[in-house]
Length: 230
Length: 230
Image (cartoon, rainbow over the protein chains, first blue to last red):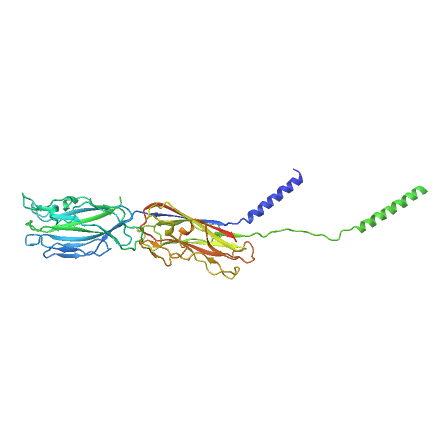
């Protein structure tokens, strides 16, 4: 190779090398990924209201925005209780960033041994009107799968054959909830607001028992609510 | 010696003397070297070191910053829905700037994959700000002008819909859908060697308030910084 060409190539290499040494970075990137997962929540909506009871009382009351774990003594459910119904109204509070389904499962255990013992069908149940109010709560129509207040005349009556009072409307007593069954559903509850926003959807869960000549004994009624995002 | 030969030698001697005399008359006694050079505008952006991620739930730093290396940070911010009970998910990214002229740092950003409803996370839900300190004595004297309000987690409040709003102008990525200035100032470096470690380090802070955003499994937030010479 002629000497002149060799010199030209060496000069070019040195020039490129110098440029490379002083290359400067003038841009940079910050890439972030994130997730927003479905969120559904059930809490207590506040204090329980117990009416028509004889000797009963609220053992563990509900506390707004705290986990729902109320305990109630319904008192006397035999004929010595002359009230029309023993009713307990339990406020529920729901929040979500997605459509939700509130389901319920219930068990009724009685010490009685005959057909006259208190059974699941003797415990009326229904959800009241769902309320979406307050800053940050999304407007939307909720679907109540129950018949509402079980003490309404339209929801029950005395059986003309047996004389026993029965809650007859659709999903108006706990026998309809021996396995997890939808009680309420609806669209997204909360707007895009911080979790510290204390508002939400509130709905009263109403339980009622008609005092009757039930077989004497003790009865335990257990109800579990579960909210999911389908 | 013949007459002819004598005449020839005489002529040769005279010619030699004349030539030596001429050579002495034109001797080179000075010289010059001429050099051309340039000092170009120099602005540089690199990583200022490791990032800091706080308030995250399930997130992590995937590609960390390395001081004096190209800025190419990748971070998983984790859960941004209400199940993250922290006040903010916050990412602090140190930026390292050097220049021999006045500079301007620009940023352009985008948010993708968050959904399109009014409850989806928007670029305005990503707080942003720079928190530059006064220049140390080893840098050229000067004041840097911050176009952002600083730490986005300071101040802020909920709007009429209950959604979190970052305080001040240019406090979210919504202000940087197109490239915009975030910081500018006079020359940064004194006349120091190119391998000098002196630099202006500025933390860039990103923050998101976990809220009841629409569920979104794969949100991507990108911020690109570019430094230019003014």
